[in-house]
Length: 133
Image (cartoon, rainbow, N blue to C red; front, side, top):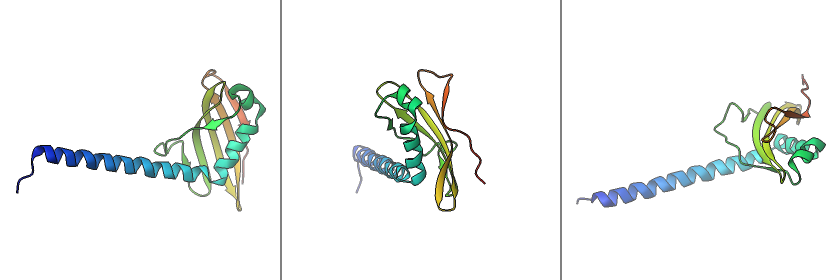
């Protein structure tokens, strides 16, 4: 029994679509999982409570999807974490960087900065660089 080229192309096309969709779904689930971690929630709370961030971005401040494949900026090993999160508000958008360390059973944000799209040469310090031992 011979299968036509047209049928093989259709099978390959549908298979590719299924694999790509599964990949996007799994990545979305992992990003949502990270968003539920304490360090992520604490870091975003710090941003949303910072008067300067509220002034420049406006309210509400929303976090956007970040790339898990960017392991240089988005990383957590259970003891430390660092993330690069795109954020936006009604007035402006930017990139929020934060670093966290785990001390005992609690996550502490050790450093956090906001870079605004409209002011590329300025970095707004949300949490000063603190050293946790």
